Image 1 (cartoon, one colour):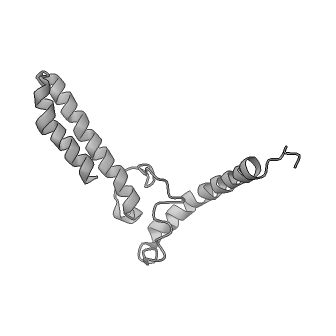
Image 2 (cartoon, one colour):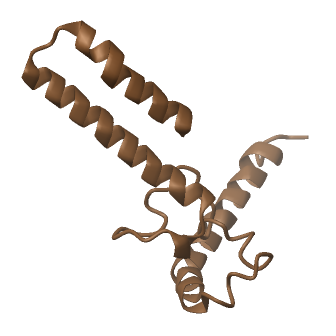
Length: 124
């Protein structure tokens, strides 16, 4: 993320002024670059921090680039003893996300078995 931010900063400070665009175009490009940097920071934050550490108005999984089901950090919660101290957050996440995750997991597993591994119409 630091490399992306430094690349955007270098573009805004060094490359963009050399392009010779008018003030309106420069403003739009700067605005777009800054919005991109902010959006990427928010999205990456959901992948390396626990859900209770990230406070946003949107759903906890809505910004995830890599969707760790049923919610981000699910495998680490018990090991790091985060569940007991934030039980209300994780109980709610498990109740809302757990059923959907399990259904999609079972469906994906069924598809993998019967369409990729075991071909139903294969005579062998």
